[in-house]
Length: 290
Image 1: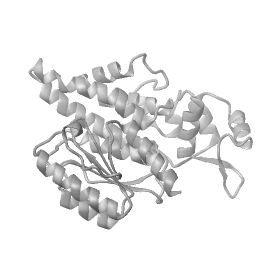
Image 2 (image 1 turned 90 degrees about the horizontal axis):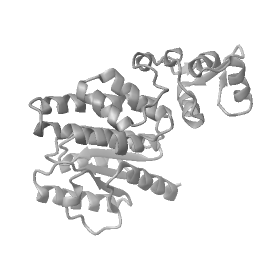
Image 3 (image 1 turned 180 degrees about the vertical axis):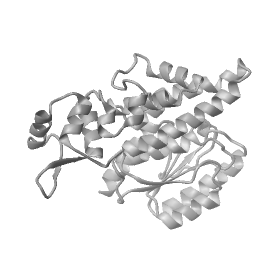
Image 4 (image 1 turned 120 degrees about the vertical axis):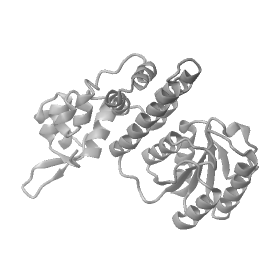
């Protein structure tokens, strides 16, 4: 996918005339740059922003270099129940179609947090229950997790580049093997303009503390979806909270098992049960710092 496209290419992608695109550019509805020869050019990030803001149907994604979405089918036509559809696609191992659905949800205007809290969470919770009823349930869950992880990684390429003014560090709690949660948190933070370092699953407290020293993050996000040793995680949270408090920074703790933990009573420690709440916390902190 090229980082720069022409008005003609975007017009073909969304099914309008090139003259309409140029008129919208002249009216300031879509930002363009001009070549030395005076030709209009559109950054792909701006094109995606425009598509999301106007709910324009992406009829020919290949026209702007999104060939993978074209292979997924007509991503402009969303099903009535995307969570149900995603569950079916993940259960069947349909990687391209699952990516097309997730990308189309984003391009239609849904936020990363909405997609993660909604369709992905619902589908993966159902996938995670299959082992109780199907012999191949564990295999299906591992495959579905891999498909979702790849889709979330690819989704980040559709986001505007993060700024350098707000930084974050993400990691899974010690003993927590789940990879999808840190990826979703990282993508959510990136969608809010944060430059984010993802340390992945099963991150020792020492690694998180070292990352704080190196990256000086405004917020550290700890994902807790599986608890091996609650005391170990709680001790780590106390250390992280103290280190962040000394720097005037925040610690967010989330994940489906986070509610089982005793968090320190500090103003900079936040329980964030959903990606939407994490996004709101980041927006609030950014507003304070600006």
